[in-house]
Amino acid sequence: MTQPVPAGSERAQARVLVASPEDEATQQLVSYLRQEGFEVLWACAGAAAYDILDSESVDALICHMSDSRIDGFRVVQLARQRNPEICAIVSGTAEDIEQGTEVMRQGAYDFQVRPLNLGKLRAVLDRGLSHQQLVGEVSDLQRRLQERYRYGGIARRSSSWQRIYAQIEQVAPSRATVLLTGETGTGKGEVAKAIHQNSTRRDRAFVETNCGALPEGIVESELFGHERGAFTGARTSHKGRFEMADMGTMFLDEVGDLSPATQVKLLRVIQSGEFERVGGAETLRADIRLLAATNRDLEQMVEDGSYRADLFYRLNVVSIRIPPLRECREDVPVLVNEFLRQFSEENERNVHTMTPAAMDLLMSYEWPGNVRELKNCVEGMIVMSPADRIFDVADVPAPLRRNRPAAADEEGLRVGMTMKQIEKLALVETLKAVGYDRRKAAAMLEIGLSTLYRKEKEYGLRP
Image (cartoon, rainbow, N blue to C red; front, side, top):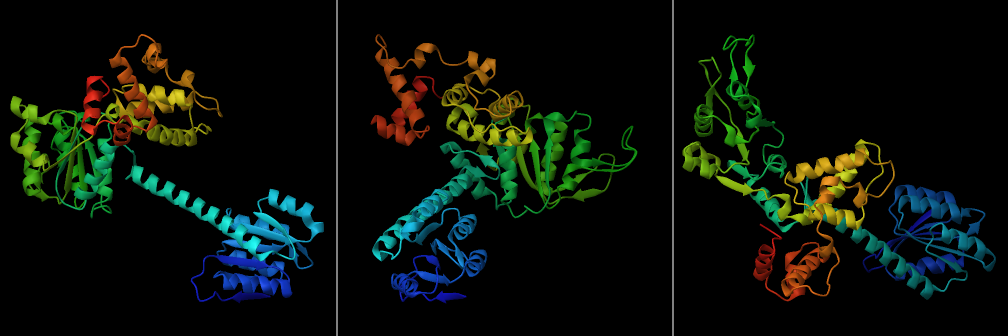
């Protein structure tokens, strides 16, 4: 028998399942909970309680320890399977105290001897529901943090990358050409994919071409396609990347490596959307969103005459600079944890963390190869590790250990240090303590944010 009990005139605070035999004490309990504003579901037998737990979302459970029709152990066990944080309160006689202790050990929130003290029960119920709400809020916060720090597959938390996320959101819905600049390995390709995934063309093709990886003799064929017989070995016609990207997004990586002749043809495609295959006479059209990336200084190349100014201006409608990893060291732990998870799964290892000393060592390294180098480093550590362990300094590759800060820097404050050395130490340790949140660091040090940036540059902590 299942008897839903309507909530009172006040908004229900939570949904409570009462699994208890039909007697006067149970009726008083149900009436009390209803008056307190709870929505109450009443099950007089274990089978009815199981049905409710299988079909309804329940925030709290109040059940009888032992009755011919109710097995309190089983009801609590099933309730916690459905909601691990459920506030489960078990009632029974004085003879049931030993069993009550065991059911609490298995996850019940409290055991109370009948007749129930309704005021005490309400206090326990409030405490358990508050804990459940807190756990839910923490889970929601973790989810939102993950969403915030992982945008389009990019896991970052530095202020520099928060600005990049904002730029992605702003530019993605438009048709504007975007030029991504930055060193090799910083993540320009991931930003390009994020722009595409958040654009109106997300369901269309994303075609990526590394211009620097294509031999000069075939770059035009790859980009624009070729007709049969256009050159030796061209036995069939071939679609180029621009045709494949029609109605989608074209990403040209290392666009600074294009030859002058290819630059001219690319400029025409950007201006009119028209091109011809190599060896062909028919003019083709492609509707594409163009994203480009380079690790070279195109402005300097324009000044030197090695890059067309008109092409540069067409590419540089919107420019997004991707900073090197050494400028956003607070991203290192986020990236390391992501790579640990990824490569542990791929290599059937169980390595998901490392000691603070090992992490500090990775954060102090300059990473000339940027994120790509860090990713390869973590993968190598995973592959060479035993199945189960926590990484320590000894697990970090030797070249990185050789570049660790001098021992004197690690000893902290010591007699004989100059005021400049003390100031630098205070700056470094404060930045570490606040996860490289520079606003927090400046507030703790009681200096302005501009002063903090100036001191970082003065002490070689940033370029």
